[in-house]
Image (cartoon, rainbow, N blue to C red; front, side, top):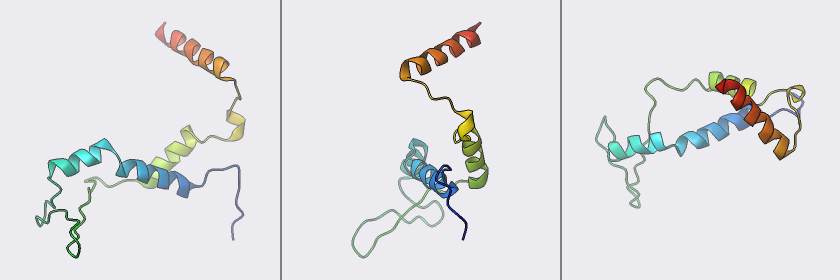
Length: 105
């Protein structure tokens, strides 16, 4: 059994968080609303009536490359500990302000 590394966020946690975000997204909810919560293939309408429950889901035409997305998140956000500087809030804000000024020039 692989040993757990407490200093690394597991891929499964990243995927679970992204799935939760996706399921609550405005885009997904808008798609469901536009379709009137009705299956575009068979016409079944969402129902919560006891004994006649019907769930409808939003399907991505192009699918989701979870591994690719997770790779990018880990590379860009969950970097190794040596790529972090620990700063107070004030110094962190100043650093970003200086970066914005440098980018505006």
